[in-house]
Image (cartoon, rainbow, N blue to C red; front, side):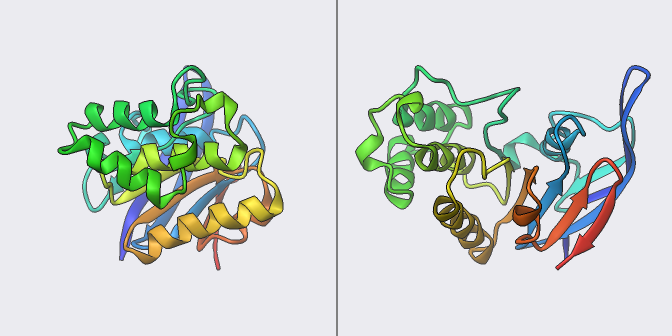
Length: 208
């Protein structure tokens, strides 16, 4: 069953067209990738799916409805909404929990710190922790309000091959538990591990 649906979506900024006729259906419990080089509008797809951006034409649906920021977990986007260097791991999670009015926020944060092995770095500022822990912090911030759809911008950034396998397992665990994941990537080898790939700027779509 399709959970994320882009129907003939066009996105333009002024006279500059980012893409046109972007069309794909990501099923519930899958990992989808938006793949392509830099400056092709990959991050904009995440913003469209989260309800933070409206298409110029076409329609985006999540769970059969218009995207709702409250029902979607949007992780950090490098050039738009990155993790804050001066905040600790724990402060990031608490901030997101309060932003989403999560009940028993401290308990939820403790659960995520434990799940993603972040207990030892909880008091460290994000800029002072390794890349894998940075990825997991970003993932945890997206998950703090237990969304059904998780959006992740270039999860492979800065990771070694071994660390990427851990990050991939984290995302696959989410889909096996019933969530849907949509990510962006500049690497073909990352895209090929996903269930569906939408390639930009062409808009070509293929499945595994």
